[in-house]
Image (tube, rainbow, N blue to C red; front, side, top):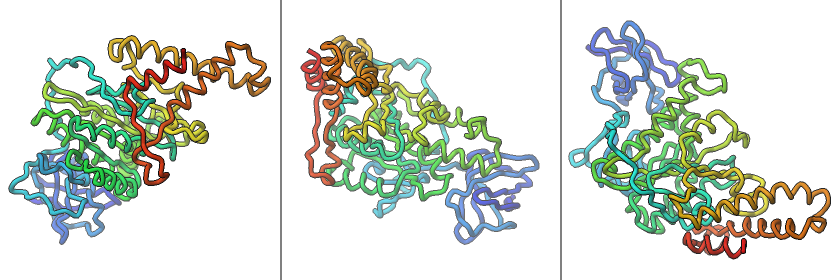
Length: 434
């Protein structure tokens, strides 16, 4: 027996079923002209299904018939998806012909693959990015997670685009880019950059930008992850997964919680914030068949790095690259805060003794530089001891050494991009410290 719409409130649609009640995560189709699809968010008593309006369709009215589709939100999977752009529901956004349903397989984005409890991380494999500050302070290790944290306008997206440009050129695995709640312009720029560089044939893209409803912004990261899991498990591929911006995912889930009248937590976010982040992050993992290496940008609201959502996402990451507005104002790009940037992977076992010892020396030097700055502001640099003056000078050289031109900004500023091997980076640091 079909159900019936009993109430409509913004993106929430209440559908009553006398029998044959749908499951959570199942699709329900409204009997209107648009055949609007809803996804069941939760079930109330007396057969009432609380559904989310996936397309924000305004034509749904109370009393309309509703029918179970007995399937969840499904996206296309397979080689046909490579080089294409999809929305959160698996519909193409690139104005190219749609995929042939008869030749395409589909997967429910909410179905989490069963993990093999015997899986063990193999030997750490360091991937070179060509960006000195990343290769030195937050080594890019296969199968791990790196976060790029910063406020608005400090270069998170540019740094992500540069990583995509550099790494996809090497042909190392299959690349994914997921735009979660960011600007539409940035999505177009990234698409044009990859197309111009002939890198689209090795990239899958998902966009749920800031013009979309919170339902799609909350779902797009899950959809992209489901496709990445398919390539990892079914085809044994190594995946490079870029997400811009993970904070917007939390924000979208928070908007949905407000619409659903859920009581917020003490920090002002949804009460389910921990599970929302944890479930998605756990899916961005490796298996016996392949790996997922993820780079996630994290917006810092009001430049407050102690924000509860930022802190919670940080706990899931292996390395954190912090971008600082004060550094950006000095004209240094990428504007990395060398003090706050940390990595659990910067160990002798992962990067080797030479790299590790250099990193310890650099971190000690930068710490001293920060403490000397306040002294110099009072008495001037000339009043320092010869040793302190030498260390202060070395620290300034190290900071400027990490600045480099980006390939993705060549057209904007006319300055050719630069790429450095890890060995070149280590040599340049050694020349400064010796």
